[in-house]
Length: 499
Image (cartoon, rainbow, N blue to C red; front, top):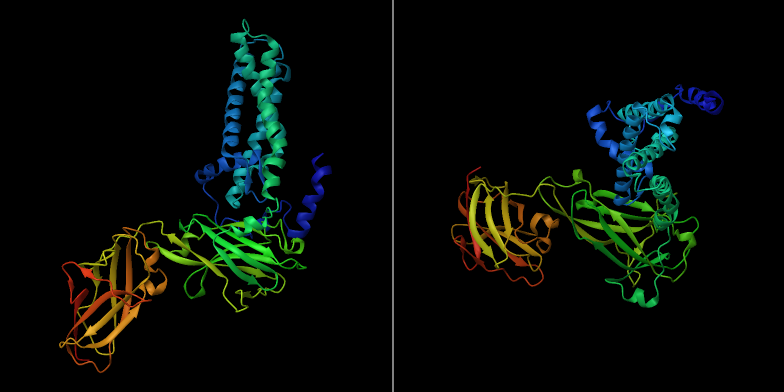
């Protein structure tokens, strides 16, 4: 029977891959394990196998709610108890109405258990080779599992009825045995309507009033295809690996054939792509541009995350979120334009990503100065001396007393013995990658600035004057504290030696 039904598949595998079981092609995929996974690690995958056995749709991303999985697990536990009770009754030679176990015979029960065990061992062995904790791989034993579950539920009700038969008629006991089966079948029948259909439903179209109420209101265009009415990110702060949602609200302007692909990605400094995010047709593929209703605004929530390996281990970072459309066949993007037709980037928002380990400052030199009552200078790293023409790395360690009210610039002036400036550096903290307006209260931030010394600088004693100011108005933040001098700055000593 096996040869008649599936023999052709093994023959094909042998011809195509030189491997009748088709294992070799899987070992060359991205989900293959570089070395066999230890059995101790495989046990941690079994809960995922169990949950997806009862229901996993799409690419394993659409699942039953947690409470349904909990009910399935508890029903299985009750079935195990029922099988044990039935086994005890069988061993003692008891007979009761609808005694399934005695009529079936021990050989059939052992055969069913063996089928489950062999399939489970095969699944574990397979997961040593590839990362595939999917319940569908237990489907070859689905018949045996189902019969054992039903038998266990019947055995449990029979065992309880043995104690309660003076008070409970046989009919209700039989009906109680059907309740777990009714639940399982009910979940299966409900899944297409409660899980699958909502997951693949087209996004709802908004009325003109609803579209006008969207915040924030934008007015940029992706070519002549769509107008971006609104875009928002929730939450705007997340931990590395934690998902956040970018909701894009588009007004279709034209249909395209073939459909365009929408992208949402996260970009770091120097246009470094840190997360490809999502590339799909709008509405998770359910609302392609070829089937748009012109002029009908819709909102498309897209879930994105930044991998932990793309974030500095102990420092938060601010990333840009970029959106747009491109042609999948050529890779060409639709140009983004503002309302006046001027070319713009596709950056629509920012997201702050926290590291997995909070940063703790360890300056080599401590300081005591607070600027504007908002930002405190905890300390600094500065070499005791330098030579003319060298670049001095100045490490500053900030801590916020409260969330800063604006984006501030750091100024560093090199003064000679007479107090005259001979070199300077101005710039935002962390090179603009992490502006002060996104700093949280109580947060510590390391900040390094290079100061280039003139090659003609005479040897002698110098000092660095450090402070903060607003870029828009130029006003400095007043400094207070033991190290605040000269009307609100901090002075640090530096000796310049002869080359």
